[in-house]
Length: 139
Image (cartoon, rainbow, N blue to C red):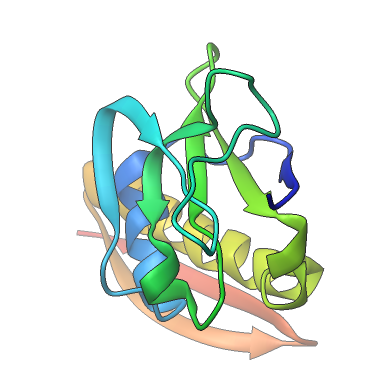
């Protein structure tokens, strides 16, 4: 049985999270209003975090993660944020760098969505000292 860990919740907008996961290379992402079971690399229900079974609302199934991988999940918390549930076995692929890139893509999606709501139009995207700088104009 694989050992899972729940990572600090930092994703509030489910749609932006799904889009960021797709930009990270996961074209097939399941979305569930009610959390559903996660499975390990052998197809067994995971129960490391919860004796009744580890469940998530946003899931990349193991067959899309890679060979001998476990499901990657994001569970909606009581505060509305999504916490990542990742197998310790898969932390070689889903490491700090991978999650940092996911967070950057997620924040870009959230910013773009908010700018659009406010009637702003993308002016430019540049990288300055390794950081993405995005400028918007009032439409």
